Length: 408
Image 1 (cartoon, rainbow, N blue to C red):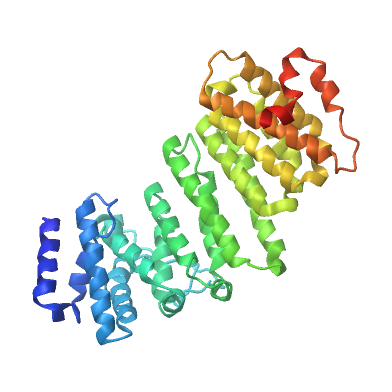
Image 2 (cartoon, helix red, strand yellow):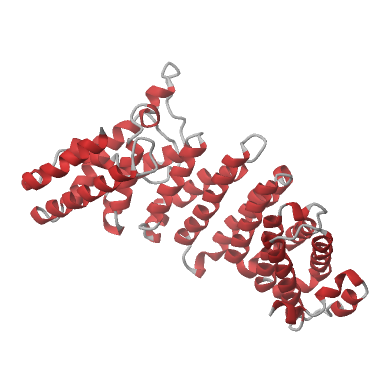
């Protein structure tokens, strides 16, 4: 039915071109609601047709009135998106889309059901797709014009308790950050508001959260937070504030995550991958966390059942590479712990009779880590361990001696 309606609109476009010079909001809303092929009511053909019609609509409208796209987006936000979120009020922002200096409790009528409070979630579910399409059409200029209309619905989606909506909210926030000047984010104070909204998502872990849901959320929230920090703190003058937030992410997200859900190997793999991103972002400032994360990584590498899930071991070796490259001046203090984890991992992988492409990748990564560690010791001020003697003392570690040749 939707495809038929879209085809009819396409035919009308060719028959009556002037129809698109001043289209009704109903037509635009209808088209925008079919722009995302991931929606259950949308087929790829319908999405392709709707997007093509909207491109033609904006082009025809802009020819007649240069400001037509901006006016159209403002009308959609004001008359279609805003009413669906009008019953949800947050005390963290003002009506102008700025951070509230004083948080006051929102008035809540306990007689209202969630269906009445959140029509965008139950009755008007297409509004999220319309909002996503609008966000895709905004730029650095128009986002400043429509800021008060964009922020409240975005925060409402991020604050929703369902994992799917939190992920959609993160996707919308990424779209916002890609077109938001750093000065606007700093002037409105919303960077801190977004941080406070996203940080609790790092604790959505098993067993309170389903493992597959937790993985999807963590894989979305960490990159979103990192992008937020890059936009909010772009220069070296704000490096201290950025590092403070990254420190919280390591403690709240990574270390607490391993403490509460480290036995879930898929969760542990995600956390290891995100730890690599955090260390890369922090650079040398990540040295303060080495006392906690190096033993953690060593423990993962030396786990006797590690070969049962090679992606976790591979992620752990990648983190070690990142640590050695970024924190090489202090790596010498932890070389024994690092070497222990790599040596035990090598022995366990060689004892495992199941050969596979993933297992071979882990072995290659261990050799690369050993070689990188050896190179880093040449520029350190602390006397390094005699690695060759250490490796030579155990026949099981013989394969690690000629790392340079094997890595090549």
